[in-house]
Image 1 (cartoon, rainbow, N blue to C red):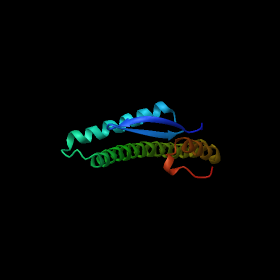
Image 2 (cartoon, rainbow, N blue to C red; image 1 turned 90 degrees about the vertical axis):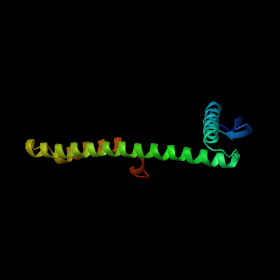
Image 3 (cartoon, rainbow, N blue to C red; image 1 turned 180 degrees about the vertical axis):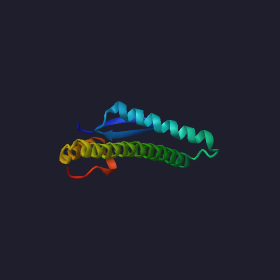
Image 4 (cartoon, rainbow, N blue to C red; image 1 turned 120 degrees about the horizontal axis):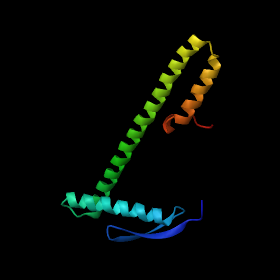
Length: 125
């Protein structure tokens, strides 16, 4: 990573210097997104209290994140389930064709490593 740089962003009418090694344009995009979420919270809440709006925006952003994580978990889980179904079918084929079981197990292991969801990946490998 590069050395941290300071990027000035505006969120809900306030300027904030953000020191980060991330791409400055990315930081600006994040700030624009957060600003939009705070303004949307303000449109649906009569109170103009900036702290309250920031908390509501943070909750909405957290909700989006959790929904995306759940969708990703379900999608990745179904990939592993399909791989397991293929493994079972391969075992049946193995019995019919007398192919070495170790060869099929190795292929299944490679499949599940490539498609394993991040939250189930083995650590330290």
